[in-house]
Image 1: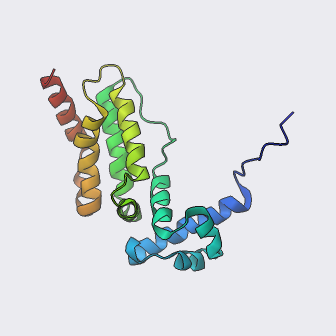
Image 2: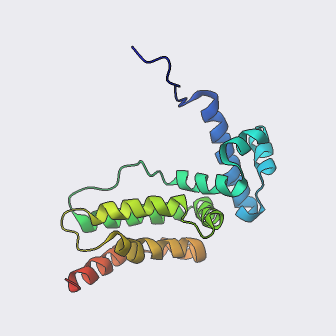
Length: 186
């Protein structure tokens, strides 16, 4: 029998519909105007929700954009794990390239990074955790920071500053450089 005194987490229903409409509104507005021009009242109007719902959940537009940027690349998804570390890293890199090749996802990344300011964004925190997970796998000769520096950073740099070049990126090149560099320093 379930403990009736504990609050139940709502996983669907109206909350899910409201959140989906807010996400859609943010994505559309960022695509149309850029993340710096987004305001909570603007999102509320587009989403058809009361602005107090947005303020209650996020507090301000920058926090909302950072949170939604993080949501787009789900940190709870399974990471590639075939037993071949190079192949898994390349697949993970390709996932990022494919994700950020979608203009609205790159715009959300830029907005999330801007919203974080000098703090670490939620998106970077999630990528750091994933990179550390790869670095902890058997056969790894590199650190999580090495993975960030040699695989994630070049992809994110292109997504933010040179998004039109992402389709030409082959993450295997970065993975080979990471692994070969790490092998040489042993």
